[in-house]
Length: 146
Ligand SMILES: [Zn+2]
Image (cartoon, rainbow, N blue to C red; front, side, top):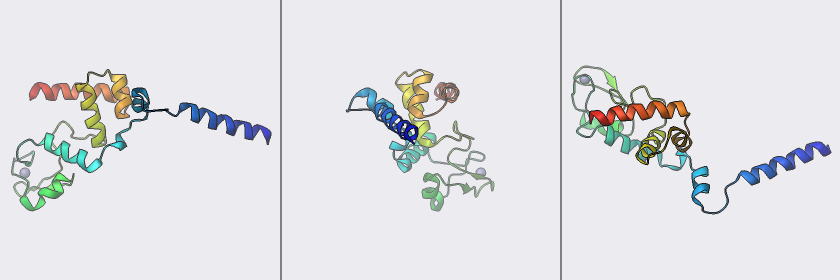
C-alpha cells in the first residue's frame, strides 16, 4: 500500500517537473503541437497553395465545378465532369498519398523555411525524423519545380 502511494507521488512529481514553466521560448517549443493550429484554416491554406490557379482535375484539367468548389476547398472529393475520375485536393500534388494531418505538413514547411534540421523539424511537427527527412526531399523537389 505504502509503495503504491510512493510511486504515485513520484509519478506526479516527475510530471510536475516535466511541465514547462513560464512563457519562455523553450517552454513554448516543448509544449507546441500541431493541434494548436486551426484545422479548417490549415486545410484552406494548403488547398490554396496546392492549387494556385483555378482548382482542376489532375487528369484532364477540367476545372472543379462551381457547385462543388466549397466542398473541394473543405478537403472534400469531387467527381470530374470531364473524365469521371474522383479526386481530392491532394490528388496529383506533392501531398498525394500523404497520411499526415495538413497542420503537420504546414509545420514541416514552416520548419524548413526556418532552417531547422530533421530532428527539430520532427519535434515541431510531431513526426518521425525519417518522415521529416522524406518531406525535406519532397518539398525541395517541389521548390525546384516551382
Ligand atoms: Zn478529369
